[in-house]
Amino acid sequence: MNVLITGASGMVGEGVLHIALNDPSVNSVTVLGRRTCGHSHPKLTEILHSDMMDVSSVADRLTGFDACFFCLGVSSVGKSEAEFTALTHTLTLGIAQVLAPRNPQMAFFYISGVGTDRTEAGKVMWARVKGRTENDLLKLPFRAVYGVRPGYLQPIEGLKHTLPYYRYVTWMYPMLKVFAPNSACGLDELGKCMIRIAKEGHSSDVITVADMRKMSSFK
Image (cartoon, rainbow, N blue to C red; front, top):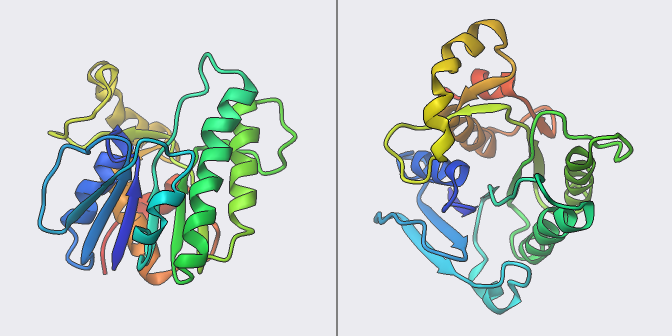
């Protein structure tokens, strides 16, 4: 497979990048981002682009992909609904609308989160916005679109972009696996699950934490 990753300078995207680069079924990985991901590898190509709200100027380089792992996102903390919508829905759809006609065989994986609300009518702002984003992505002519809904993600040891506060909370992960197994998984499991589904497909357009645990072993 040839895969495209966004958000590789963040914790989730870097973890997915790490898994993809080390998977033998992945032939090439292209990272699209504002700044370098900080990694080098024979499989890796970077497209650095300062304005992720408008990728039309690099559209001719965004072809030939079998899967897109869209890990680019921001926290809703401190943002109005209009701000969060622009940085979540508008940005994501803008890139996806460039990719879809150029990659009709692409499976598009959108990282949203547990609690995403596809009714778009709930009380939780971020859940409504991400639900609307999932809904509108499903209308695009990709081979498949998946809303990927992780909960707590245990970071991959040794990577560069793990958020600093994780050093204070990773100790909880063994307990979460026992007492709330459907709310937490490893970032490696997320990456492996998406790669497997990109190859094999999935019975649902929503990927849950349980799916990540179940489907993270390669066949």
